[in-house]
Length: 117
Image 1 (cartoon, rainbow, N blue to C red):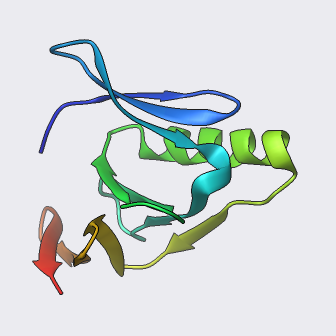
Image 2: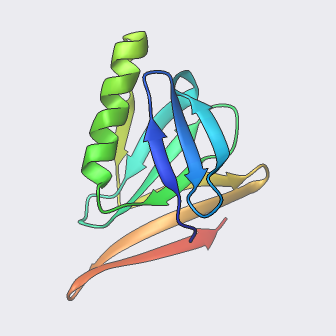
Image 3: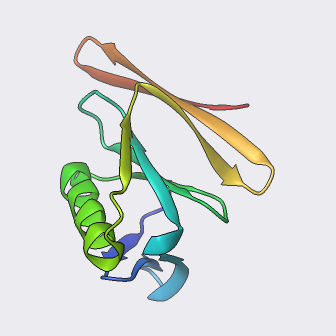
């Protein structure tokens, strides 16, 4: 896990490294295919991107981030961003690397597993 700053504008998502203040990634909102999140109270969500590798992130503000992304996409393109809720989903961690995230409710919280496919 790496600490990042997430900035969402009307047209793009920016990922910034807070230690170096360098832009790590810019993703056009038009390239976002959907958002995946679990049905449990955890902090993980994935931004699924059409043309490149996806983003798996964790934030205590998951609900607010999802809401802002859906609203920004809708206002920029009149496109309703798909939000998929499941306790298991896949994402492309790199060009040829697919991983599966699994969420299980356990006593006192949520157990999260990330497996390579």
